[in-house]
Amino acid sequence: MMLERKLQIKIKKAAFAAFFGFFSVSAWANYEPKAQPMVASEAPKDLEGVGIDEQRGSQIDLNLKFKDESGQEVILAKYFGDSRLPVIISPVYYSCPGLCNFHLNALTDGMKLLDWNLGEKFRAIAVSFDVKEDAKVASKKRASYLELYGRPAAENGWHFLTGDEPNIKALMASLGFKYKWNDEANEWAHASAAIIVTPEGKISRYLPGLQIDPKDLKLALNEASEGKIGSFVDKLVLYCFQYNPHQSKYTLYAFNVMKLGGALMVMVLALWLLPIWIRARRAVPKVARS
Image (spheres, helix red, strand yellow):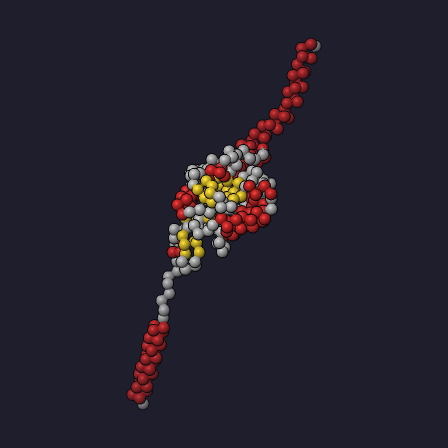
């Protein structure tokens, strides 16, 4: 009996081992290794060489040639002729299925909330980086956004340009704007930003992203104009805010606020003491006569 029982146990073990071995082999045969997930600091291959390298303080070549929405050849200097007016440059392409429209929509919304009129206090130009696009598509895009903006002054202040490859590449390189064609998606891979340029053609600020805060836009335009287009209150606000490159927005600058508060306190104290000083001065002759 003992021998028979031991034999049964061995048979069971052998059967179990065979079953487990078969299951393991089958599982391994059906196993397909998965690609390792990307780490947070690693950019997708589709986006390699795409982005914006900010070139603040760099001078744009104002002799670069483009065609405006009517098909007329122009040089960039045409839009920088006024010594007061800063310019917003939007690198886009007009047939973009998504991002460029989101950017132009956000810019339009931001400009609509300003108490400054496009064409009077500042200018804006959109430049297509797609050499295949022409003035016809630029004109249609401009018409739709002028209607969306809805202010007559913008007619002479917002232009949509196209150009040839050498001029487009030269401008995009000076802006630090990097883009490339994606064959798989059949569209351009690119970033988006409203680039604020001084009246002389120097890059002042970048406002990236798909939401443009009207406060940041106004401060950036006022800063680019060196305070020439803003009121006294606008200049005061610009004094109290400073651009934070880490947040890509303007934040309250505590040191300047403290200085302003200190100056205000001195003024209030002086106004409070002035009547006392005047009464004291008037009282001196009376005492002398007595």
